Length: 388
Image (cartoon, rainbow, N blue to C red; front, side):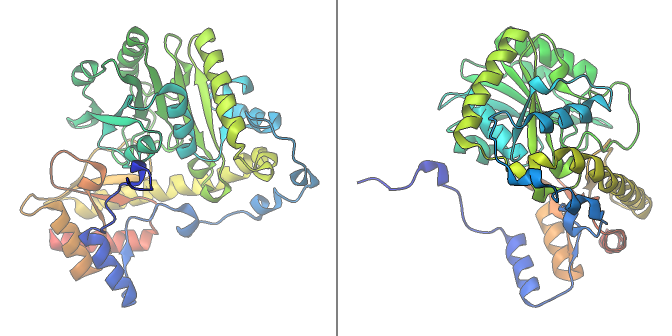
């Protein structure tokens, strides 16, 4: 008789050494400088009371489910894009409870069991979990660093096979902070159109660029020659992860886009996961959440400048970063990055993530969240410099 549980759940449950050490220090109530904090609700930001008041109307008491999301909420999301010079119609939008759920819907839409999607490396280590839950596999294509990050297009173009269904990009990427460029999108669009693939773009950090660049892509769903999807949500756009509202914007050729939205509607109708209150409040949350987003922009820019100043002239350095909430710190390969992270936590009570958490192919890198409280961030990097 076989196991009762699905093989989707066959994950290694043993915590890594960094997690074990951190748990011990927290049990001992040691003061940790956590330079990995990525939850804006725990980052000391000021949330305007108007956000809470957004749920005060009687409309939150009514339930009239629409699989694509309520019309007013989708209009609010379309207006969010239009205000940024991006042309989006409410009919192109389907609401989800999160970006993770959006991925799950798209993998259901595009893939049969055993199919695969191509995802970037290094990047946020969630794709493998999301794909396995849908009985889909992933293969990683490389990002390369040559004074700035970019897609290894030559390698990527050779990767699709008969089971490949989609290419995922993260724009800007987490944690490298690199935006997709027009020249890269041109190749991706041609590759997807030629091979019959969908292009999926995670754009949750798109509002957090550190400087303008006309070569950056704002929204992948604006392409015309292949089926494309742009993903985002309140979690990063408004610093409101607790509100659980994300969305998919579908783009590409009309027939394919319409078919995709019909399929997504069937999938969403099965779950109806987005709460009615957050849909009713969507327009107000997007408007008032901009105050939080502006605080995040100031915070991340300030911490990035502090990091560069603190490590200047040291044996470490900040890799080029264009946007997002993270920075990558290069440290000497005199030891492995895990040993760097363990020593910093053990001896200096500074928590940083080693690069292998994000599948960096080479060593030695540490990853810091620019969302961290500035005083903690600066002191943590001062202690890192002491180790360097």
